[in-house]
Length: 153
Image 1 (spheres, rainbow, N blue to C red):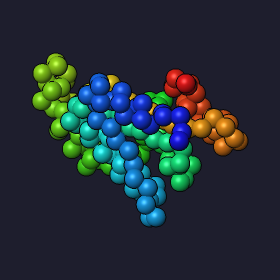
Image 2 (image 1 turned 30 degrees about the vertical axis):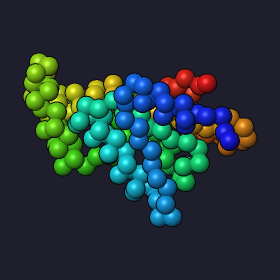
Image 3 (image 1 turned 90 degrees about the vertical axis):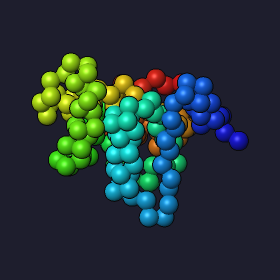
Protein backbone atom coordinates (compact mmCIF):
# COMPACT_ATOMS: atom_id res chain seq x y z
CA UNK A 1 0.00 0.00 0.00
CA UNK A 2 0.68 3.65 -0.30
CA UNK A 3 0.41 6.38 2.26
CA UNK A 4 -3.37 6.78 1.99
CA UNK A 5 -3.50 10.17 0.27
CA UNK A 6 -6.36 9.21 -2.03
CA UNK A 7 -8.29 7.39 0.69
CA UNK A 8 -8.02 10.35 3.06
CA UNK A 9 -9.08 12.74 0.31
CA UNK A 10 -12.13 10.62 -0.45
CA UNK A 11 -13.02 10.40 3.25
CA UNK A 12 -12.63 14.15 3.82
CA UNK A 13 -14.67 14.89 0.70
CA UNK A 14 -17.43 12.56 1.84
CA UNK A 15 -17.53 14.17 5.28
CA UNK A 16 -17.66 17.67 3.75
CA UNK A 17 -20.27 16.48 1.21
CA UNK A 18 -18.08 17.39 -1.78
CA UNK A 19 -18.22 15.54 -5.08
CA UNK A 20 -14.97 13.75 -5.99
CA UNK A 21 -13.87 13.74 -9.61
CA UNK A 22 -11.02 11.63 -10.97
CA UNK A 23 -9.99 11.10 -14.53
CA UNK A 24 -9.99 7.58 -15.89
CA UNK A 25 -6.93 6.77 -17.92
CA UNK A 26 -7.40 4.59 -20.97
CA UNK A 27 -5.09 3.64 -23.84
CA UNK A 28 -6.47 6.50 -25.93
CA UNK A 29 -6.59 9.16 -23.17
CA UNK A 30 -4.71 12.24 -24.32
CA UNK A 31 -4.89 16.05 -24.12
CA UNK A 32 -8.30 16.29 -25.81
CA UNK A 33 -9.91 13.94 -23.28
CA UNK A 34 -8.17 15.76 -20.42
CA UNK A 35 -9.57 19.10 -21.62
CA UNK A 36 -13.04 17.51 -21.87
CA UNK A 37 -12.68 16.37 -18.24
CA UNK A 38 -11.64 19.89 -17.21
CA UNK A 39 -14.78 21.21 -18.91
CA UNK A 40 -16.82 18.74 -16.84
CA UNK A 41 -15.14 20.14 -13.72
CA UNK A 42 -16.03 23.67 -14.82
CA UNK A 43 -19.63 22.58 -15.34
CA UNK A 44 -19.86 20.89 -11.93
CA UNK A 45 -18.18 23.63 -9.91
CA UNK A 46 -19.25 26.70 -11.90
CA UNK A 47 -22.53 26.07 -13.70
CA UNK A 48 -24.03 23.61 -11.20
CA UNK A 49 -22.44 25.33 -8.17
CA UNK A 50 -21.29 22.05 -6.60
CA UNK A 51 -18.38 21.81 -4.18
CA UNK A 52 -16.04 19.57 -6.16
CA UNK A 53 -12.70 17.91 -5.47
CA UNK A 54 -10.48 17.09 -8.42
CA UNK A 55 -8.27 14.24 -7.26
CA UNK A 56 -5.27 13.93 -9.55
CA UNK A 57 -2.19 11.81 -8.96
CA UNK A 58 1.18 11.60 -10.64
CA UNK A 59 0.43 8.26 -12.29
CA UNK A 60 -2.23 10.05 -14.36
CA UNK A 61 0.26 12.45 -15.93
CA UNK A 62 0.50 10.90 -19.38
CA UNK A 63 1.53 14.19 -20.98
CA UNK A 64 3.29 17.08 -19.26
CA UNK A 65 0.70 19.36 -20.89
CA UNK A 66 -1.74 18.11 -18.24
CA UNK A 67 0.38 19.88 -15.63
CA UNK A 68 0.50 23.02 -17.73
CA UNK A 69 -3.30 23.18 -17.58
CA UNK A 70 -3.30 22.42 -13.83
CA UNK A 71 -0.66 25.14 -13.35
CA UNK A 72 -3.00 27.66 -15.02
CA UNK A 73 -5.97 26.44 -13.02
CA UNK A 74 -4.04 26.82 -9.79
CA UNK A 75 -2.76 30.28 -10.66
CA UNK A 76 -5.88 31.99 -11.96
CA UNK A 77 -8.75 29.52 -11.77
CA UNK A 78 -8.81 29.49 -15.54
CA UNK A 79 -7.26 27.18 -18.12
CA UNK A 80 -6.17 29.22 -21.15
CA UNK A 81 -7.98 28.35 -24.39
CA UNK A 82 -10.09 25.66 -22.74
CA UNK A 83 -13.50 26.98 -23.69
CA UNK A 84 -14.74 28.03 -27.09
CA UNK A 85 -17.07 31.02 -27.51
CA UNK A 86 -20.17 28.79 -27.61
CA UNK A 87 -19.15 27.01 -24.38
CA UNK A 88 -18.48 30.34 -22.64
CA UNK A 89 -21.95 31.51 -23.71
CA UNK A 90 -23.50 28.31 -22.35
CA UNK A 91 -21.81 28.77 -18.97
CA UNK A 92 -22.79 32.45 -18.83
CA UNK A 93 -26.42 31.49 -19.40
CA UNK A 94 -26.18 28.77 -16.74
CA UNK A 95 -25.27 31.33 -14.06
CA UNK A 96 -27.43 34.23 -15.26
CA UNK A 97 -30.26 33.72 -12.73
CA UNK A 98 -27.90 33.34 -9.76
CA UNK A 99 -25.80 36.29 -10.90
CA UNK A 100 -28.88 38.48 -11.17
CA UNK A 101 -29.97 37.39 -7.68
CA UNK A 102 -26.50 38.36 -6.41
CA UNK A 103 -26.81 41.81 -7.96
CA UNK A 104 -24.27 41.21 -10.73
CA UNK A 105 -24.64 43.11 -14.01
CA UNK A 106 -25.86 40.95 -16.85
CA UNK A 107 -23.06 41.89 -19.20
CA UNK A 108 -21.20 38.99 -20.83
CA UNK A 109 -17.94 39.89 -19.06
CA UNK A 110 -19.62 40.17 -15.62
CA UNK A 111 -21.47 36.87 -16.07
CA UNK A 112 -18.30 35.06 -17.11
CA UNK A 113 -16.39 36.53 -14.16
CA UNK A 114 -19.22 35.38 -11.84
CA UNK A 115 -18.90 31.90 -13.36
CA UNK A 116 -15.10 31.87 -12.87
CA UNK A 117 -15.50 33.07 -9.27
CA UNK A 118 -17.76 30.11 -8.65
CA UNK A 119 -15.17 27.76 -10.14
CA UNK A 120 -12.47 29.31 -7.91
CA UNK A 121 -14.68 28.95 -4.82
CA UNK A 122 -16.05 25.47 -5.50
CA UNK A 123 -13.22 23.58 -7.19
CA UNK A 124 -10.60 22.09 -4.90
CA UNK A 125 -7.58 20.40 -6.45
CA UNK A 126 -5.84 17.59 -4.62
CA UNK A 127 -2.60 16.61 -6.30
CA UNK A 128 -1.13 13.36 -5.03
CA UNK A 129 2.49 13.19 -6.09
CA UNK A 130 5.42 11.28 -4.77
CA UNK A 131 8.21 13.64 -3.70
CA UNK A 132 10.77 10.90 -4.31
CA UNK A 133 12.79 11.10 -7.50
CA UNK A 134 13.76 13.64 -10.10
CA UNK A 135 10.32 13.86 -11.74
CA UNK A 136 8.77 15.82 -8.85
CA UNK A 137 11.67 18.30 -8.69
CA UNK A 138 11.55 18.86 -12.44
CA UNK A 139 7.80 19.40 -12.44
CA UNK A 140 7.98 21.88 -9.56
CA UNK A 141 10.60 23.90 -11.47
CA UNK A 142 8.61 23.81 -14.72
CA UNK A 143 5.23 24.58 -13.12
CA UNK A 144 5.78 26.99 -10.21
CA UNK A 145 2.11 27.14 -9.18
CA UNK A 146 2.47 23.56 -7.93
CA UNK A 147 4.41 25.18 -5.06
CA UNK A 148 3.18 28.77 -4.98
CA UNK A 149 -0.55 27.99 -5.00
CA UNK A 150 -0.60 24.72 -3.04
CA UNK A 151 -0.20 23.47 0.47
CA UNK A 152 2.41 20.71 0.43
CA UNK A 153 1.95 18.00 3.00
